[in-house]
Image (tube, rainbow, N blue to C red; front, top):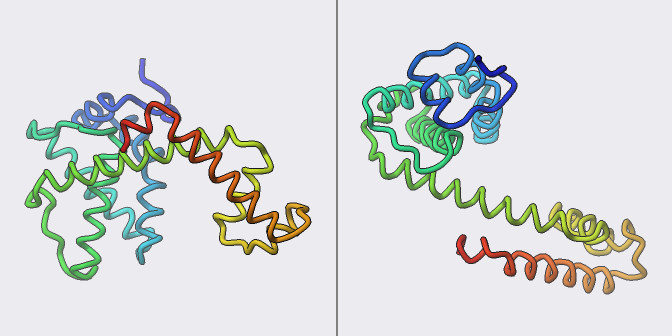
Length: 193
């Protein structure tokens, strides 16, 4: 029984579906992964059309590598695919959009694997941070969100109902320390260092 396209598939299902040119799997890949690729391209001087081109080129690279037996995922399918698309877009930017991009197969596969591994590590670090951030009290979460958005301490004091900017600074320090301690106490933190 085929899985409905709204559900994410296992990495192996993506690879097998890509190799078999399964329309349901291709639709699933597009639904789940195109928004992230498009955001990266749009955030880096590209258009939606550019994003669609990069996405298609990325799929073609994955297909050729999988068909040639040269694909061993060292991270999740998305992380690997994202790293490939990111590299394609970078090459397009550095060579100019009008110039033809050399096929990615001519690049060293090790660079792609390194990019994918780095993206995976950053993703794992972010997941650890998010899980610990959610354990903070609501007051600390709100204060740190404002701080990370670049809101000034005087404005934070006013929004949070603190008596002074000095207290807001002290509270921010306490909240950050609490977050850092929770992250460092987690067993996975030592593995990610």
